[in-house]
Length: 243
Image 1 (tube, helix red, strand yellow):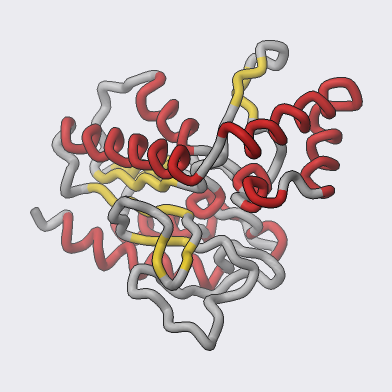
Image 2 (cartoon, one colour):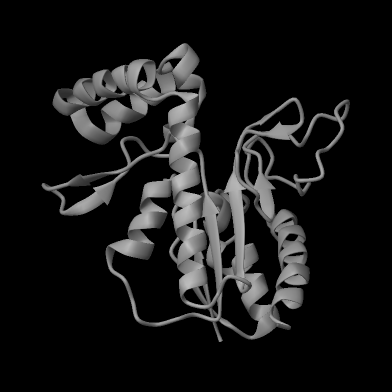
């Protein structure tokens, strides 16, 4: 069997190196594959955008149909560009900062500007900063982002249905929560929240949100957190592969 995964750092195993772990050895996708004796095909990368997931799926279509598909959408404000000088796809800046919805309300912060300068240099760096400032102040907005996410979601849903894997698929997302509700118009199997700390103790945990242990001072699941996610996913997959 072959299991196909795509998404951002929450599917890749982001920040596990901070605790001395190797992502490819302990992440939830690996644990799920080990349980079912499946080969893991994981195209996820840290900071990936929904555009990247779409590009992997539709940019170079394959005739191979895998046994199970795991797609993760992420914060809609993320994007990617193709750099003709480097001949590869790039994210404007490194890390999850590319998806910070706070930019829309508060503008770029100093850390993001520093990262942008480090990545693109003293000549192009300021131009990228100006471009992103304009984009988040004038172009990107909540309705635009949610619409693009829905397009991605529906396209991927249609894809798995077209290859006979509508039932053998699992959809997750990295999303903001407001008033204990996910800021998305779509129904997912699993919701991640990018917060350094776990869900506030004084608030009721929404049923859509799986609570798991996180890396200290980081928003990503810890080694134990990946085990919790894997167990949750395995139970769902077990039911779906019976069909």
